[in-house]
Amino acid sequence: MSVYFAASSVPSRAIAGDGGAAPSASSRAAAPQAHTCQAPVGPSSLSPMLARIFPDRFVPVLFATILLASLLPVRGAAVPVAEAVSTAAIVLLFFLNGVRLPRDEVLHGIRNWKLQGAALLFCFGAMALLGLAAQAALARWLPATLAIGFLFLGILPSTVQSATAATSMAGGNVAASVVAAALLNLVGVALSPLLFALLAGSAAAIHGAAVLRIVSILLLPFLLGQLAQRWLRPRVLAHRGLATFMDRTAIAIAVYVAFSAAVVAGIWDQLAGREIAIVLGVTAFMLALAFGGAWTLGRLLQLARTDRITLLFAGAQKSIAVGAPLAATLFPPAIAGMVLVPILVYHMTQLVVSAWIAPELNRARSV
Image 1: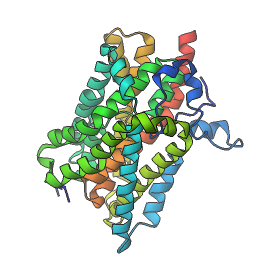
Image 2: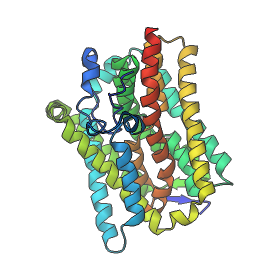
Image 3: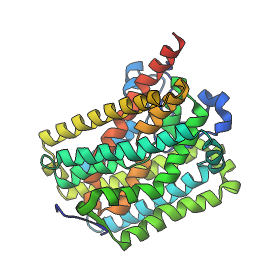
Image 4: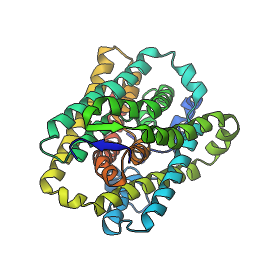
């Protein structure tokens, strides 16, 4: 395909999973209500403990997708059909993202250059270097395609909806969070694959076919969505629930197709207990460094507490909504499934951790 490897305190409020529509920055005063369009934590009978473990329905959906791909992977003649469906879903996902990301508000909000610059630097600088270090450290312990997944994790942009929801729960600057999330994703659509090509070095080479796929499947739909904002954005925002469902369905399809190919290629033969433990441990360590580093950077820059909270979630979180489609675009399916393992673990963990720490930050502010 296109990439070749040389080595072969609001506990009842959910942290919205990646892929939802970003609320308008002008609706900051109503920010806590802006997330009620997201799928609720679960049925009313769901215990508070389960609601804290699975703060958003998308977490168990990802678990179920991986399980389904492991038990019933796409095989044989069904593979081209599944890949075509996945590609169509990715095109729709990025078109909707282009429609919803508030370009005018991003341009207006860039005036807070210290916060937005810090978010860009941390997300695409510090996190990319952290991913590169993790890949280098794990190269002798993990399969090459799995180790490079940590670099892939590091170069991804932040989430949109979950970072904004967590900022709202923590009492942060919601308007700035909307701008930061939108800016990081606007930049990330183009910058993430370029960063990966630069940092991966001899481990991977992105050829003309991959560039064409990135432009036609990711960039072009996104730009068309941006151009159609004036006419379509009000309608899309009026049907947030449907748009979120379509987003998550597209992500789940991309993950299912990629992970199916990895299962057929023998991913579970390559991932023994030791490898799984390493992935879980390193991912948790990276998440801890990400949250700690973002908070420390905010203090060093002497940002207001509300802006430090915004930087915390915008800088530390990573987007599966960009990661899954980008992996499907850059890598052959059998490799994409392995590369996605770190971001899948990271994404699910960040939702749980954010749901725990956001209310604590809000309570600490009021003490």
